[in-house]
Image 1 (tube, rainbow, N blue to C red):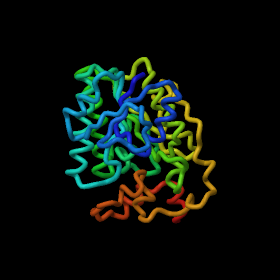
Image 2: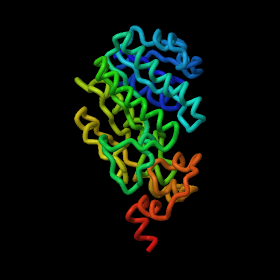
Image 3: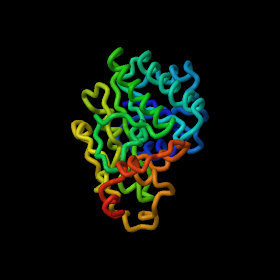
Image 4: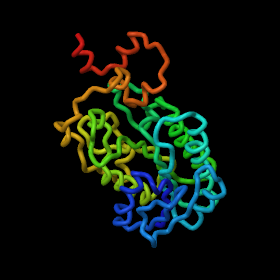
Length: 280
């Protein structure tokens, strides 16, 4: 398929580019400025996500859109609003106008990050965003549903975990998504015969994962990597800097800008069974 990849200068896009090319896809890259690492003959269309007309033009003439562009950390609401919320609407509307087959949207586990670590989530679990960033990803998933229900534009919202070359902290033993597994999930989302408005968890086959995604199995996603192979490495047992980050799935996004005085009973409820047992 001929795919528009937004956020082409980001780390995830850089990791995906050779993998998706090897899987037979041709890529049109888009970002605010041309990434220095792109080959000279690569197809590039400059577009700031806040520029509606530029985004719409970038969507013309491709089969699908892989929307990776975003502010990928917590930020002021106005910044998140402009790039992650308005920008994502520009992408979906551009895809609709251009007649693209589908959008693969890089959502995030932070759309459900306020769930306790003791909870085993699936794609039907309720939204509990842990940040303005997570809120913007929940919005993107709802936007995807809206564009399917109203316009028939198919989509796959990928709730990406911790996508790195290798896990680097204890939380990643549950949330890690290898680059190879992400490429497989994107490829399966692009090739699936029918998606509707699907939500898939982007996570490798980690023994300690907090998410069970039966819907991803229906498109043939079979992750190969397991964070447990890295469990004995430095940093894998280090505690998080805040108790909230240890008890909730979103990690440090949970305690960022947190002002609520948490009653002890609530904190106790958020703790996993193993942590409770260890504190008795």
